[in-house]
Image (tube, rainbow, N blue to C red):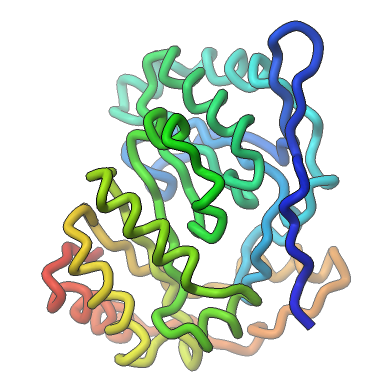
Length: 259
């Protein structure tokens, strides 16, 4: 059975001009959420049910805390000098940020107002909800293409691949900077034809600055267990260094820069 589509309105406008959203948490990170040190805001709610999800506790909007844009920006402002010195910025992640498009747009514009570069971390499945205004407030898109063949994508995420490809094409037409990310899972996404399908598509877009091949791991398993959910990839090994490098070579063969 497919997971329910969670597209109900998830933002509202509160007192005054404040915009509120459902926020899971925020954090400072370096190296995984865009260039430099980042202030990362994790929004609650996601329509995908990825088998390797590291944060299943962000799937439901109700698991988040109703938070205003002003509150998030006030927290981020404490770190602005430190973030700027590192060449970093602010990233909104999740969950799926595009499930709260107005909140995401307002937040991205607010980060820009603090003088921070912005990044949107998304699966692209809800790309149709990203307005031109939201994209204008986004300096970099971290786009996960989780599989290259529709049947594999559905098995992995419970959703269709096409919306992500359509969003990637739209980003290319706008000339938007994109870092593509691909999680390498032995026995699931490591087949040459699987990787090759993503590489062939991405190689023709012309706006992919880099590809990050991310080795599968089981660090999120404890969260699944805490939620009384079965982590079906518990016995899946991490890919070897040779397997990861072979996957990078497939992307490089398509003319892309892969790490």
